[in-house]
Length: 566
Image (tube, helix red, strand yellow):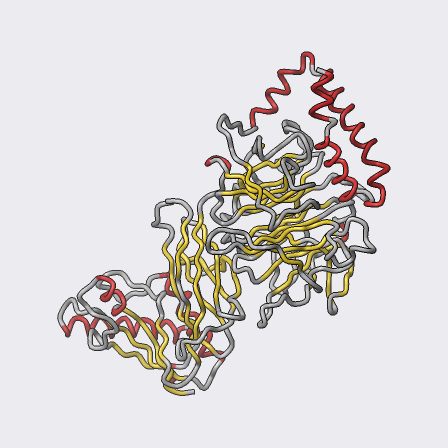
């Protein structure tokens, strides 16, 4: 037994973990003096714990009932020498599409303060090509890498925003502890980081380490920190965005998540429900392990019992920095086994029960509907029929490309937004789709310039078959027309409805005319003068597609408006 303890607990892995702890929590200058003693203390602690098991063995087994076990061999895949080196690579953060990776490299000669800061930590990134091969990692420059210890916490699904360590502002000045957001600029470069203003943040972040992540829809910010000065035992907190651009005061995730020990490095999967985090709670395989839990309601305080992900994701050492792409197929993390030198970035294929709920990744481009040129725009997606904003994004400043992640079980309205344009919204009915697993779909979005003669199709106005009464989910779309008219008092419009060729001409004209009138009546009821809007039913007389197919007939059944005066 003593020989086994020496082999498993006092070997290079423990030395490496002790070094990691000293660098992250204590003082990097103390590595040579402290690591041997810290590793020895850890060995003695583990040996004492094992020797004292005795009649408590049953309790230990019971604690491990929530550990996922796996009898098959799961391959740990090193991401290769284009990313990893003989230096420590840490804290991977993978994009939703799995093709962009940010990570930390320590002590690299290219690091910002390589010569003046011991164990310098800078942000590096790598891109995966169409063949699935990771290209050589590149070093990011100022303002993302500074004289501080640098890290990326989160990437937006569109790859246009990242969350980084530290509070920054005023041209990249470092203010201290906190979290900042960087946005990609029109030239493709990253803009200056801007601090997320969190109510009473300094009251909660008084410990040795802290960090953050964000949900893919940007509706929740998850923080790990402690209000106890000098402590390394963190808890997990949630903050929510406020209308004034700030974030609410941190709220504990509750006693199912936060135990007396250490909870840190959370990651919220693309489904917005499944959370992975690192903890040294009882029942683990080593020091800190990766655990999985699911959010049970919208309070963010009720969670399922956390489950340990087991081996090989968890080891005898200190395990953290777990991240996934939107597909949820692979976990990306840091490993000390079979590396190029020190810690490397690896990926592990997850078991089905370790995966988050499946989602759909929607990608496309935003275009000017008149010129067909790409546009930089904001993305807004709302749930139907209630019209509640479910998230937002940005299209690329270079080609208008965007990506958003949508969970199943809901219907969504998706649109772009830019000054002097009106959006043609699209809808996705995901509540009727079978959860067949992760999917990627392409859907372009169009913005119509607010000019005389421009026609805007209203895709999210709905009627029941053979009816002209508006369905409730139509309100969200028509409210946008109301907003346009209120913000532009000189605009006048013609609102028209159209049918396919099924039925008689007389029937189709009457149906379309009544549908157009229903829309106009709704808009007038919201305070718009009747003199500014005319209704018109065209029946089947103005098709935009052939009526011989279901797809063509669907395109012909539409409501739209034309700007007649501005």
